[in-house]
Image 1: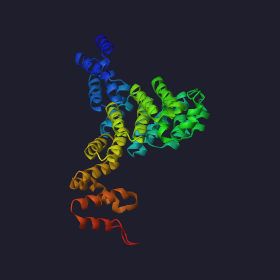
Image 2: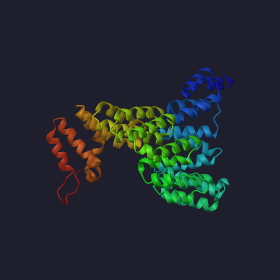
Image 3: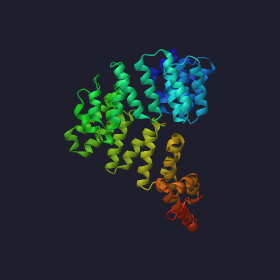
Image 4: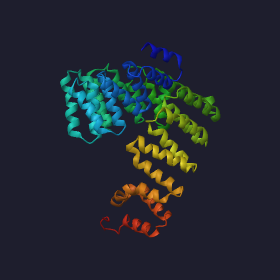
Length: 402
């Protein structure tokens, strides 16, 4: 452990620090815990899982490490492994955070009865009412049930007006839907104090809303958001778009780990038709946030707009790997790039899993229909393209083709 702390002092790169620490002390529990958290935050799930399993195999993994292991498995698309670890944790000490996470994850997996059963355990843990409500709300948020979560958070604040976490979550929900007035009215803790004009001005705009939400974060995130909002509000900078973009780029580099600030700089560069500068920021973001699909999604749109089809294809393939929920959109962009690169037969195979859905519900799959037909034509299969288009455009009153 002493050697580990010495390495932390000597090396400026955190990644190098942990690599060296693991090389010198590969079985040290402190090194394994710290490095696992670092790798998980960076999105390097494989290394995080490897270190956490080492801790678990040695009997040195506590509840926090086991919960992180379950979460890493979930993000890696391994639900069986995630559930096995989480259920083992629940069957043991049943820490409230783990119970809430498992409940939310089960909802995500469409296993509502078990999710409700798991969340019911929160009643038996003797928690303060506000904490129980907050944790249940967090599970519902994970499951995409924002309205239900918001109602529970309001109950949590009624039960304990000093529950800062519940209040922060409720304010964040208000900001997320663009309601600056509601967010400011809820701010009894002073997170937004002194920044009311910026909150009111920039919350309604989706391109700047994410930066406002960072005001609720830790000290670094607050500092990054405050500086970015100041750059946006500065009248002198606003009169000089080039200087404003330069200021935002500097902030993106200074606060490289605060994605909404980096994203803001990217969007300003793209709006100014400067794809190269935006690409540099996006490439760095993809390295720092390998688990975050948004930099890749923005990159794909920018690359396709500038006809950089090979790079767009690579980015779309990467997006499919890191975000299963975005697979449909990624496959559509992938197929489009494949057609442009003369790979029509591959585009047909890419979209084949969506053809049945497109035939059954053409209105909801117009993009798939257009690209799949274009792929068939690009592959020299005009008659197949015509038959497909007829299948998704049946005569009035006719049943969908089967």
